Image (cartoon, rainbow, N blue to C red):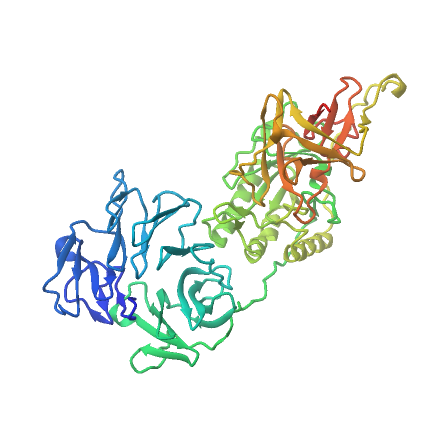
Length: 628
């Protein structure tokens, strides 16, 4: 729309139109208003070259003015200025051309009514906007997210989650997209946006949670402007934006008034909305039902507090494609950590070992496709291995680094779990289920919905009976142990004061917190690197003992040093903010001992659970106290 609420439409192969009247010439799409009375169009007869048309002076389109001989993929205009994006075939780079000249490599732009231009600084970058005000002043915003960008008068702009020159927008619904702003309408800012969660086009008084929700599947390419104390909302019935697809509504304190259709009645595809709270309808969740045809046991990952033994208690767990050599004492639990098909190394395993595979959803697959893949792969794996098997169902939401949110909703996780008993019931050799994971930030313990499904799984398994795994043959007796009085045992390190400052070292490298923060983890955790030959200011930590275990906190920022691992040879260190709820867990509470053989101060992150018996499978490092 232009500032007078004239509407141009056209897209997806449809002809351009203005106020429901088709253009008097063939054009590619609708184009853009350069000013309230001039439309820039891609003239089909000229191969899409940019032409200016003034419909009030030239209603038949006989005096079009060539502006630029190039075509465009997107165009925006206002205040007598314009910016058009041309994306040629690779390897030629994209070009933003128009009133700013040619900006090679830039992305799409938006233009305010006063001519302020905001464009994506780099077409291929994930972040970065550039603002050019009408006087030519330039502002670079390298961290701005180039999504839902709207240029505003006076060199200002808004985008999803941010703003320049004004406060960011505050839509009530978290999934607001394609947000448009009309400022200072009777002293209040008004937003229009689409919500997939609500299935509605929402018009909301910014930050209030109040407004109108138009529940429709036909509200495409909406726009919103302020005009004479009201806001004008325009949308299309189709993505093609045909001349007859327009709906235009005036919204004011008096209520809604349909301007298009001309009879003032709401069309059936865009029903009127009532003013009120902006709220999501909350459908009840669908929970899986489990029923097993043979005895099945449940052994979760990180099982503390689950009421079931941990999967690590029944054997040595490994996701290595090649089984360890020599094989560990006792049972080996060999798992396949991939959605790809698996060739099981059956010849390297013993009759009492067990093999397992994941039942994880994969982005890009439908639920039905994932379910069919799980069943097909289970049958293939059973054909390769005639002994004990297990499955690892997805009992967590996973993390989406592209959005910073969970990859799967609770409902999507629960829908996947509906297939669990179908897979297990394929063969009695599938003897146990290892849910991943119980004690995890996006897993079972903190999530009431996943907790309910996990409890239902335990009940169903109990009704089916506990499975009996193939017995492990007894090991030959160990040689007699020497008299304990003849050798030293590790003793817990006793600090001379309540706390001390030092550094953590593995081999010849010291640990540091990466304060620049480019590689922050899924929950705002900090990256830890062992890359300093001598400790610097980023390497110092404070060691204390607030209870039966120790804490190691960085001296510059309040983060706990923690360590985790899937395999014994693959430790992972991280910095966890102390501000998080339950920040200090077992993996952030090491035990520090003094090794009598080497006189070194050694830090173990899961001792004594694994080290009490003399094992060496947990992450460990050396503590170097800083000289006074």
